[in-house]
Amino acid sequence: MLISTIITLIIVGVLLWLVNNKLPLDGTIRSIINIVVIIAVIVWLLRAFGLVSF
Image (cartoon, rainbow, N blue to C red; front, side):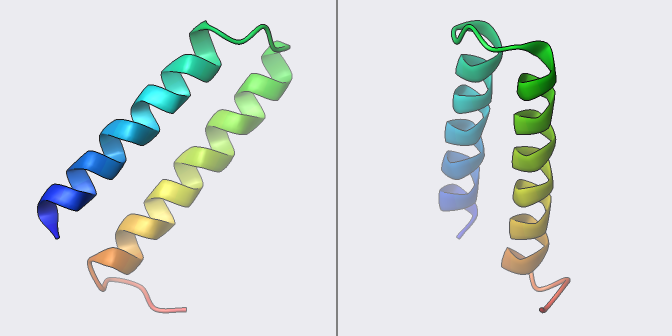
């Protein structure tokens, strides 16, 4: 469980790095993508560790 969580976080981090540094996007779109991904990861982590159930 812990190793798969760490691997997933690394993959998400690399994807965010690619979006922020390699793709020619407008700053507003880039910010929206960052916020959505970060919120999704936080919700996923809370659900994965059983702190929140929807």
